[in-house]
Amino acid sequence: PEEVASLPRIGGASVLSSSPSAVICSLDPDGLVAQQLLYGGKNATLRQKVFEAQNRKVPNKEQGLLELLTCRQRLAQMRGYRDWKTFALRESVVRQPECVVHFLRKCVTMLEKGLVEELRALAALKADLRRERGEGDGETL
Image (cartoon, rainbow, N blue to C red; front, side, top):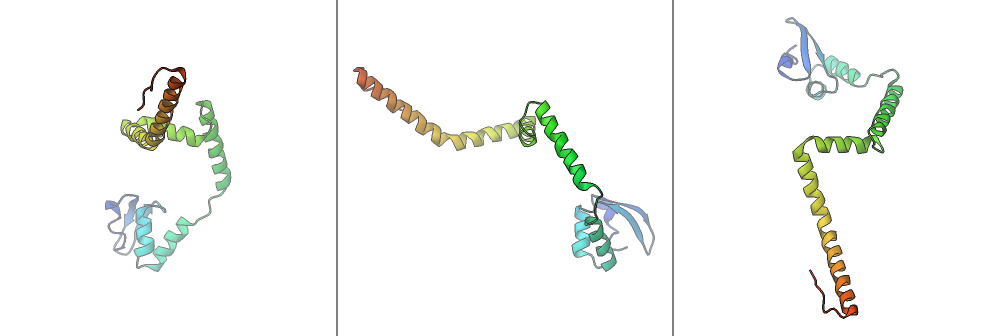
């Protein structure tokens, strides 16, 4: 009981009942509290129960995941995207202005060197064409 006495103050757990000798609580088996109890708990029985909760078999788990993936794929295609990851990336980027700005700045940084090289190559080509036509040295960047 002393190990879980602080559970109401920690997210992911709620105490259902308590007595001096026992605490019955509900907690997310994959949450922070479960991890703390599993790795730092002194009570072996409690650690074993947390471990079993984290590793329990979920019936038809694979079938459920397949249905979820199929639904995601269909939703993405209905919205005009090739696949779910493209849809999810696009939707998450455009929902927050800070993300859009960060994304665009990162794109500029990544593309800048290649763009400068392309512009120099175009300027050199333009200068060569002007020289061939006898129009002078041409402009360069």
